[in-house]
Amino acid sequence: MKKYLYGVDLGGTTVKFGLFSFEGNIIENFEIKTNTSDEGIAILPDIAKAILENMEKNNIIQNEVNGIGIGVPGPVSSGVVNRCVNLGWGIVDVKNDLEKLTGINVSVSNDANVAGLGELWQGGGLGYSNLVFFTLGTGVGGAVVVDNKVIDGHAGAGGELGHAPLMDVPYLCNCGKTGCLETVASATGVVRVAKDYLTHTDEPSVLRILEHISAKDVFDAAKANDAIGLKTVEYFGKYLGYICAVVAQTNDPEAFVFGGGVSKAGQIILEVVEKYFNQYAFYALRGKTQFKLATLGNDAGIFGSAYLAKQL
Ligand SMILES: [Zn+2]
Image 1 (cartoon, rainbow, N blue to C red):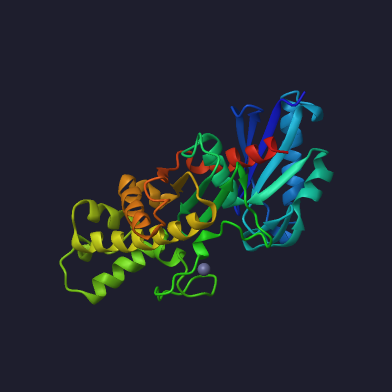
Image 2: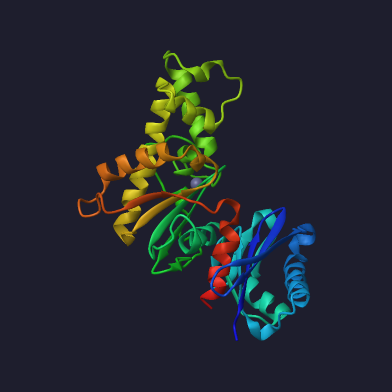
């Protein structure tokens, strides 16, 4: 009988694991260091060893494990990863290799996609089957989930919403393009926009006296009705709300869910994004789409990958 799921969140410094019941209760968390030497050749054998040891410790036999789900920091298509700079990987057939090492079925997706799936299963998107997830951190990641399935896409770039293009945004993105959503909606993006307003206006602002400005400072300033804080939050909401409206036109999700460090600003984010969404979206979508905060934090990855394992 299939009683267990393993969820794996593979990052550049640590690999996090969760042992889950088939129903989705977390039984145990553990983690190992990511060994990125020699182009990350030891990573999958290390993951297999950690899982097999955990099974032995808990007296779990192979037949009781429905599968291993894994989220990796790169584009994934049909279980194959196409370059993970953080891991030193080129093209790696994660599904096949990990199945050979463990004898257990494996499902693979991109780390942000997996986080979105986790939020749908047990987090801020609980109860929905269709959602769009944004992780607003140092960069911006995303996930599109349709009928409980995450969309990896043809080239593995499905849900890469941080690189959704904006026509009149002048900032250069790390990916080489100009005007990606990430350049204005990530933590670094919010600070960049605020600094631009500070440089190009004389308006008084509490942000002017700070030596280092964080995204939290900007949202706190806006909550205190600071002019530059408010302008920056409007700019952030306008572009994020616009991209939500564009994305909604393809999959008409029940909800948008926002996680990552920037989302800690809370309700102010939902309000400003929803305001602009309702301005840009087709009338049939307005007022029908929910805006929610993520709730799983750093555990979203292991939850989502366990859900991938459940779907095998
Ligand atoms: Zn980009």
